Length: 407
Length: 233
Ligand SMILES: Nc1ncnc2c1ncn2[C@@H]1O[C@H](COP(=O)(O)OP(=O)(O)O)[C@@H](O)[C@H]1O
Ligand SMILES: [Mg+2]
View (spheres, rainbow over the protein chains, first blue to last red):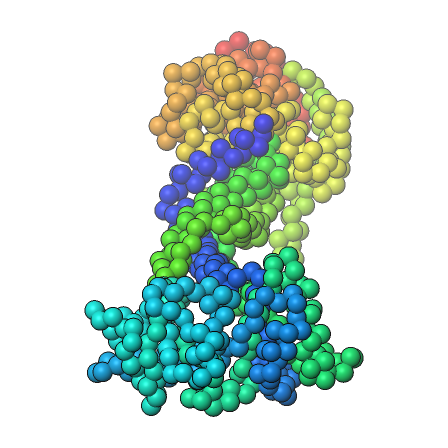
């Protein structure tokens, strides 16, 4: 087959000019590496987020007027007009929503906690009721979570995350000890199992107090008041959400022709929104790093142009003994594709290694992805195709006599 | 086998037109041994390039083996160059990085001959020019005469119907020139059709027929009687 011979000729030509082939390769490697680093790193971050939202549980969702990803100014304005969720809605759902397994309120505030000489700033103080532990993926390491009575009597009891325990109570049993949240004193009743960190952010820098107690301490949460709902089963999640939606719409007097003035967020929905956001982010970053690929492509083209003009005589000889235009074209395209393909392979591996190091900084891990590998190969050989075709065509179209008369 | 009718080749250099050929008509039969002679710049190479299908005429017709090649496209011309014509150049035109064997194999690559067959055919052609012992040498490791013999082997490898040589001895000393001419004489003796271009009378006298060209026109066409030939025959 002629095509195999042409491939062989291309390989020999590349080997014969190692410095030049190496330079071209370098241009491609730099371009592909930067694109692949970004693709792989983004994929790693996405994986971390997915893991995080898996913790929320597949059968739970959040009712909020405030949260969720906002993608337009209009959406933001609409959110600002929403009236807060009413605490009464909790009871309403507990009574009226038979598909709901658990409902609990959830409010966050950040505060400084102190014990003796130690203090921790910016700790999330969550205000919720006792069934919170049944809804979210959180386990009690020791002690206990707070009870219905704690909430009813607005007791100043506190359930702390592992980081709070570690920092304030090193080597001391925290149960029964009093800590300060802001200016108020709270008695520690339990400690949560450590959850580690995501994106370098500790997931254990929180403390939970009874909802009533939280309102007493921080005041009316207003629009920041959310509800967590757990459906009886994953299969019935959609129906449960519909039921909650109907109950809340009538409770909040939403006209039948108006959209909801609250949002229901499942882990999936949040992930979807984050995905959209990441997609935009990814395109922007890939766009920027593609510039380096274009640079790589121009290197390929430039070096090939030099190669063609240096090898004009060779091309003339080949044409004079019967090489057709397509033969010369293929020979040079093979050279370009071989270079960009192998540069692509190296770039994919390098990009993956760099991305792995990068995401390790945020305590994440990535494994090689087929999408990234295929994308990398398509991008690199595509570059070879696009930037190699012009010099190759120039070579193929050389006039044999003129080419032969060149010194 | 070759018939040209009123071939013109005109080059445009800026505003000036150079008529390298002004209506050359000729006929050459199979098995002939023809020399095209004339002073430098008279249009010999231009005519040779047209006959060798490396170029197309500005005007006129050219038939090779009954087929009109003067209006063929690039690919068809490449095919003819590959199968019908063996071209020998003054400057050898070998690939410097390739061995003699690979250089001789080259035409076979472009018509899809298998690599095993290529090697056998190339070795056979190198045997014809008596270079089998040098076949793994690169051109830089060969003498001028040996290089030209590699080029002749390359021209012969495809069993072309026509062997063309444009000043094949132009870059060689007189002793080596004689060797090359003897080789061409032998090839003619084996039945090949050969056309050579030269401006040296001694070289031209190896042929059996001499076409003289002057200012792009065929000035004379004479056959050389055996007694006046320079060959060893
Ligand atoms: N590519 C070209 N462009 C312009 N003029 C050319 C070209 N090739 C040949 N010529 C001119 O055509 C004439 C014939 O050239 P050529 O056939 O090479 O002569 P010869 O081989 O007999 O020395 C010369 O005057 C030469 O300058
Ligand atoms: Mg000439």
